[in-house]
Image 1 (cartoon, rainbow, N blue to C red):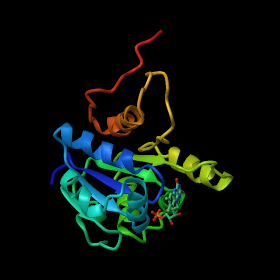
Image 2: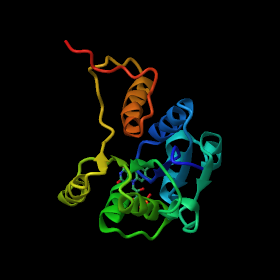
Image 3: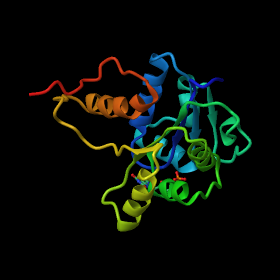
Length: 189
Ligand SMILES: Cc1cc2nc3c(=O)[nH]c(=O)nc-3n(C[C@H](O)[C@H](O)[C@H](O)COP(=O)(O)O)c2cc1C
């Protein structure tokens, strides 16, 4: 493990194809990822893709469950490039915002913030309540935190859902210096 490793947390919001695409982009860029999945993420992964957490093992250097609070990403002394939470549920958002680190995903996010490393949150819920928005606002005020909700985009003329997923995933990994080869950037009118 080295400072190139990106900690990827997956919580139980909708958006598992985004998680998979982000892991693929990180790997394609020659970077490494360790994956932390909450129990609800495993449930959502099954519901949305028919896959099991073990099926993602080939896309990450290690896969940890939420109870493995002694795993490397639980410590700031373990070097990492930062952390991406994709998808990020409102429960996990609240936990990160409150510093309530009662599982490995929340602890790793807490560590990322205290070490001033980049933390990207693919926060997903709709509609968002005032509570959700308050928590996201508080987190967005931290200079190392970026809130990147997976919102639909059309300006790049996507023809398939996969193209939409790719575009959003490219935005999510970019803060870590991961370049997505087929990312269609805005070229101007
Ligand atoms: C299929 C499915 C989709 C869900 N989608 C969302 C969502 O988009 N956003 C959200 O905040 N919670 C969503 N939830 C609810 C969370 O999974 C639930 O609040 C859970 O306790 C979150 O736990 P975690 O943050 O530890 O993963 C969804 C649940 C299921 C089963």
